[in-house]
Amino acid sequence: MSVWLRPDGDHALMLSLHIQPGAKSTEFVGLHGEAMKLRLAAPPVDGKANAALIAFLAKFSGLPKSAVTLVSGHCARAKRVRIEGADAALKARLAALG
Picture (cartoon, rainbow, N blue to C red):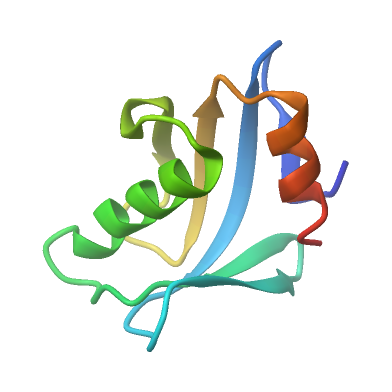
């Protein structure tokens, strides 16, 4: 598994992300050091970028928003996110990103 993507228990993953808020579109960009860079269309105001991050990762994962937790980096670009209920297919999709 990649440096930015680590198992966290039996059915959970921990993602290390570098966020670029205020972008034109929301998308994975590629590796940024030991983190995956993710552009977010939402502005970094009043928690909008964090909410957009959780919604994007939930949709990408095919899981409910409640399965995605922002663990650290609430006010920073460097964030750690935990995804619960991850299956082998999701792990493979994420691993293929970088």
